[in-house]
Image 1 (cartoon, one colour):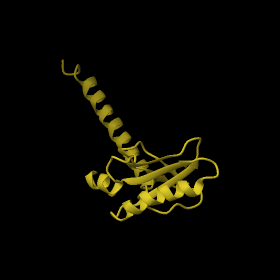
Image 2 (cartoon, one colour):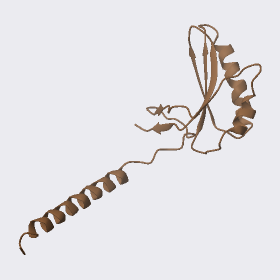
Image 3 (cartoon, one colour):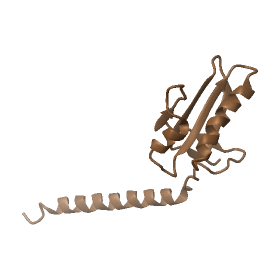
Length: 138
């Protein structure tokens, strides 16, 4: 009877050792990886930005709130980024930029970091999103 429990004790010791070795390896791997820079950091050549799913979406409308009022109602989080996306017809980039910059000016007046993304499309569009984007360094 005394030896019957011996294999169970050895198996439990081996499982504990395997667990500790795995946790140790994961901790070392986490230390080797650089922490992501804040979303407001300047991009350098070779950097990419991963745009996260939006936490909140704003579309300007004649009967809706202004972006300043909308931002005042959002939860403040220094990790979030306001991205203003404007699309324009080919040859109308100035109009797209002006619409995006008007929204950005209101947001900057609230002390919020803004990123503007402009590109051509078949129909013009303008919207803003709040999200937790991560900047990747190559």
